[in-house]
Image (cartoon, rainbow, N blue to C red; front, top):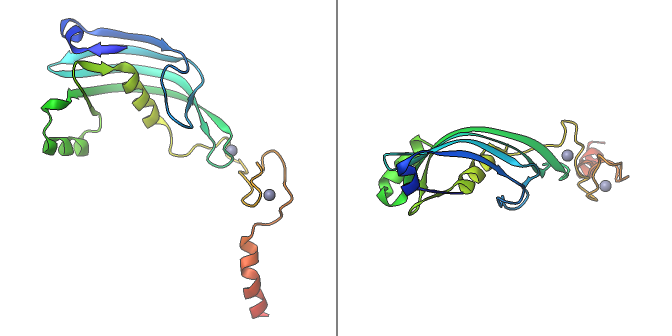
Length: 170
Ligand SMILES: [Zn+2]
Ligand SMILES: [Zn+2]
């Protein structure tokens, strides 16, 4: 959905959208697995586009330990401002980035809603997700998922490093 500043100049636009998985490309290792529901408003405030509302969906990312896909319910409330890029001088841009992270930019006649949603969803994801708190992860030696079963590799190699030292002590 393209939010055109000429339409927004006439009246605010309701953001009531349901986007099926696949509509937004999240890049590698992020999968939208349920529909994305968006509700809110887009309006023009002087020459800034303001997006206010909420979104909800379910995302899957690889577990940081075992790499299995892990479900994350995502709910975000947003109140965002986008400025036309051509009015920003270089110095000003640097200052804004430091003090107000909720300001974005748009080029030309407006902004693609999907772009803004994509960014909000990616920002909401934790740096690392694990499938469960007791995830055993992958074996560092053979790579087997240790949640599925023991691989028989025994203790990790770190033990071997200390063996000569233990001998010296004796
Ligand atoms: Zn895991
Ligand atoms: Zn192993």
